[in-house]
Length: 640
Image (cartoon, rainbow, N blue to C red; front, side, top):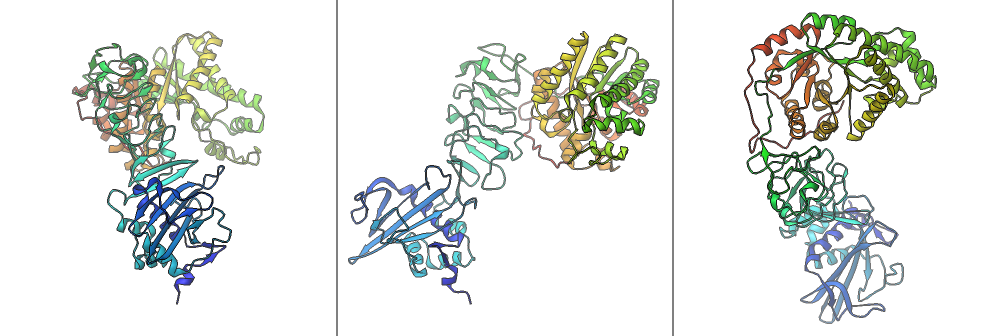
């Protein structure tokens, strides 16, 4: 049978049971709020210090004292120390306990008891330290407020230290947890942050010591300059108006704030708002030219009229306007996707009003094996020959489509291919290309600049040759910086070839770009929403599965599409928005597609006639954003 002596096993002067180390830490939490600094306890004194204890309190027959500090100047390890003593009938009982413990097991939990705390020496390896018997450890914990049977239950694994703490702690501290990161301490009451500076932290990456939604009490913690990222944990700010600096220089587009925000109470300098109710702009602490209110709404649910940078047009009493979230008797154009000459012919034969998507990567799925192998040899440092193949295939594909389209719009998407698929088609291996792993080529962010420059250069040559307006679509955008980089590359090529008629679009099709749809809209000439990748990201379903569940837009995807449109229209109401993907070919989705504020849909060439007929008879009703209409959406979805 296991004995308590075995449970309290010592190693190098330390009790090995981690839960007992945590119990010491919780004992400190139990008493720290009642400690006073510079408490005089005459029966206790430090060696060479005297009778003043830095933090502690008197009890009826003794005292309790302690502190939580870093182990040394260079260490991020937190050390919790707590001492307790009684003086009854002339008998002194004194225990001093310490533990390396952050309650999250990121550092080891260690426990030590030191004899006769009356003469405590920091050199714990000296004569004042000893291994205290089990009975004395239990006695020390009882003196700190725990029941003997409960301490034994923790030691034997029948109760956790946290469960015991919650059993006896007052309601106002029973759910307290804390963590220490890089010499910064963060305290939580349940899932509410009540102490700490969260300025500069990234919410999606922060190691919260709990599951579920984090809530930051701005009246108690610093939230200035927070980074919400995609806010996958749905972090929320409360008591915003109680702290002047609560939202300063913070991107709130993904933040959840349910209370109205008074600009007369908070400094919103360089703050970017999302769908939040913002009041009193006429008394704003920060100059309104420093506050981005493009997505904010007033008490009636109307958005502020802002310039292209999100700053209100009137620095005193800004006007507000309704945001159109669905069509108002707008005629929706029907475009088709076409990757080759045959598809383009069929599209226009069926009445397409243009080509809404040319998937340029499909030149490789239809080319001969030798050309594909030659292109892939680019990754084996055979750049020049590979780029010549790319240029020839691109020129052949785009020129034939442009000849058929004549003066109609043609939107050409830059390369977006899955390397593994084309590698399999070529029958090459990674070893053949001297690669250790499959490179990431999804979207233009994963492609080499020389490849993109070669492809864009061919498009510029064709634009000059046929004197057309060139529409280039940038796919799979992860960050605004991605789009800026590619836009700059395209414009450099346009200047090189003296092409002036050019439109650059942003394709929003993944969870990363949703929150920044408004910023992309400011930079782009048109927006294309790709429902295929969006659905895969949100639902985890594959477009290649043939499943009807994939082909029908889910409620969550519909919410996200509406959210994208709202954010885009809020900053640039007249920008052209289109939708493409397999979902445009399914009649089940038509009611939704004809009821959102878009300019065109892109469908398969064989579906054009049917879709035009439906749209001709549809009469969308006008809908305006009203107070309470907006929802804080949870964008967390399954990845591919």
